[in-house]
Amino acid sequence: MARIIFPHDNVGEARAYIKALTGLNNIIIPNAPNPSEIGQVLKVETKFVSVESSVDIGFGYGTTSGSTDVKVLLQDYWFLKEIDGTIPEINSWTFAVGFRVGIKITGFKADLNVGLGTLAAKAQTDGLNIQIQILRVGMPLGPNVPVSLAVPVTLDVEKFGELKVWEGAILSYVETKRAELSPVLVSASVNINGEKLLNETPGIRYALWRIAKGMKLIEAISLLNAGRAPEVDQSSVRAVYSAVFNDPAMVIPGHAAEQRTPGKNEKDKADEWLIGYKNL
Image (cartoon, rainbow, N blue to C red; front, side):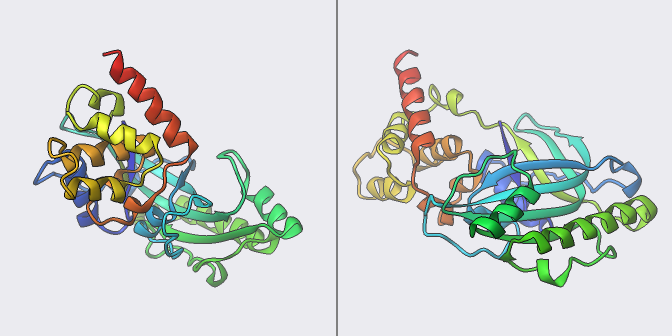
């Protein structure tokens, strides 16, 4: 199972992602819920995404040509409404109002539990390379994002302070102006199970070997186009890369995610799945 993060203002793009992942046409996306149906408790969802995926959902961080030394810590501050899926491929749809914080981290490791205030302090005292940008979601009439945070800027304690002041204004706005909220589709939970793929298509071993050896998706596809493995279907290779990297964008031909280089985690996972394949 994977959660796909959508551009928060583009239902057409969401439909295209779902089609690429499931092969289904004419996917019916539920209507947005009424503002009164949106939850009243602020929830924070945190995950790492590639720089390319962050650009897909609206951040202005450009591309990294597959570098594994740069990543974006995505922090979503949501008032949520989950709507159940009506087909087996879709578990649920998530509509929300709130804001997204994209933190671009270069050259050092950070974990999902690190606080933004801690990052701001370390960036300022240790000279770490960290940028921040904020996107407002589902509040067209709400408080504007501070000018200093609406585009990618270097994170420091002052910027963190501005964010906290603005967050307070957002919380007050959502509480007192619920009728003005406009919930938008931000993600979906889609059934993608990499282990299950092992006994479904003949191209799995091919893809897992390529990942285990550190090959980018674009390189694995180039070999297929050159006729090196005529029995292998390109779509199954993309599905395996997508499952191993936990990056749904990899199923989309021509997407920048094709340039991602397998790191230690991806190589280890591919090795584990290859062992599982042998034991089937």
